[in-house]
Length: 155
Image 1 (tube, rainbow, N blue to C red):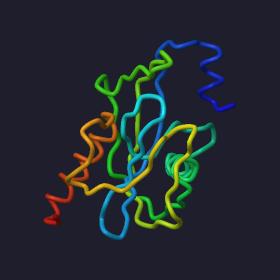
Image 2 (image 1 turned 180 degrees about the horizontal axis):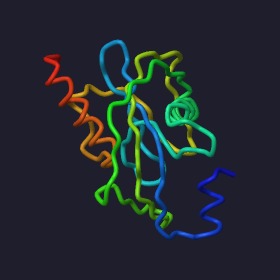
Image 3 (image 1 turned 90 degrees about the vertical axis):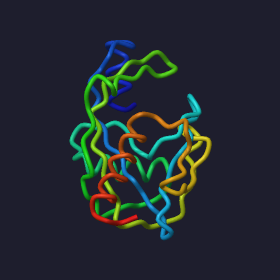
């Protein structure tokens, strides 16, 4: 049982402040890896809740490995997202205020797959042509990435 599941057993669906981490993972063609969530069909970057004793980097690496089968490294912090706009109620009724550290993964090993418990599909998308139905954290992370790349003069 995860830490979040243990907390939910105690507090029910009431809002939690949930530290989490995710990663923008790119293939050699520069396309970004996204997953379609099994519970609501929304696309997102791989990531999830921090467990006790982990660093945010370890959380991002564990979540990407669990959800996609990929091992990532060379993590660089892109941004930390927090605030009332990142409040979310899951289909289960559980409410959270996300505090999400988003990393860029500079190293990638393996072939992406799908963790059927959490996602129905995993695939790479052109950074400029991502699905319209993305969660706010993922959309905000991609917007930040695009902004950083434009500022650096890369396209």
